[in-house]
Length: 454
Ligand code: SF4
Ligand code: SF4
Image (cartoon, rainbow, N blue to C red; front, top):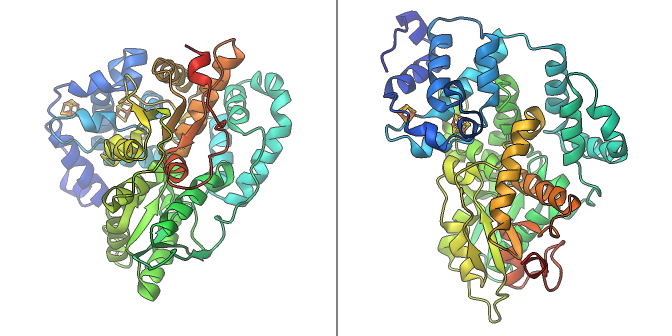
């Protein structure tokens, strides 16, 4: 694509990076075929190619973002399916990240939009505040009808209440700074990201990861002070805030690397993994943090990526349950991890089923299901329909957002008279269970979901 940025514009590193990305797009439109919003809406401006044109026009013309641009960029899930499809290697993620930050600087959103975004940015990345918020949301659930009918913000309030769990899990042993020693001879030492939302909603995920790693000779450290990776606010275009979260974690992990050494930084939420692997790019022009950020990104690994070469043992008595594996967008498109988690599950004795339209997002996409509830619900229903057709005993995925979204979709289907909802768990919980850990909460001793819905 031909571009006409001035030398003065290109002196800005963010603009120079976007210009390079824009030039690599050849307008072929292959990406439109795999874009969830184009699939739902059929509007070129809700396709990657259409959005690329809008972003080019906005950035090149140095115009404040228009309501039209904001509408179509806000509808983008940042699922990155377009990046997997694109034959020209267009780095859509860096382009849309820049556009979102530019929108945040140049566009004044409606009061209701600003309010909802401010509430989300002030609560989700902070564990204690998020725990308090979902505790309140539990009691507000019966008011969903009234709150959901409020003008402008109603549907978003309803979406927030829907996603709050009926029971807030107790704080587990993970979630606090600690060193979890390897059982037997220590083969490796890793840090595990605890982050923000996941340890509050499902502390069982990191507890399973720690148990499994420890059993296979890996010492796990949760360094003091580590917190949100910055991804949630990053997707809202709040660059200063996302960089502050990221910079904080980089310093914490780097200190740990210097002090005691780390073989890897492991992540059990693929959305966070995609962002942490991008820290090197985010801080490329930061004289103080560039090298540290690059080191952290180089050490960052999804838990499945780390476990695969360890060649875990085969269980003596395989559980033999059928697992529908949902590959999170941040896993398959963001980190290009596709077969590893399925190989691990098969080796652990599960029958793994692929889900039709596996490349299409479930609608979770960070906080997309709160900000764009109608589109998110359509994608969720499409996804649960495809999963249900595999007749699984269990659904497994590697991202907390997808777990919440898919579980809610199945719960709604069951409420509407559909079959009982299958348990939706993290891949690591199944691996830990199959290899000697406890049965994940929510999985009945003998899952009957598949048989009931047959
Ligand atoms: S990131 Fe996803 S929703 Fe956004 S343009 Fe690409 S494929 Fe479409
Ligand atoms: S597939 Fe790639 S090159 Fe083709 S229009 Fe989409 S982004 Fe541009």
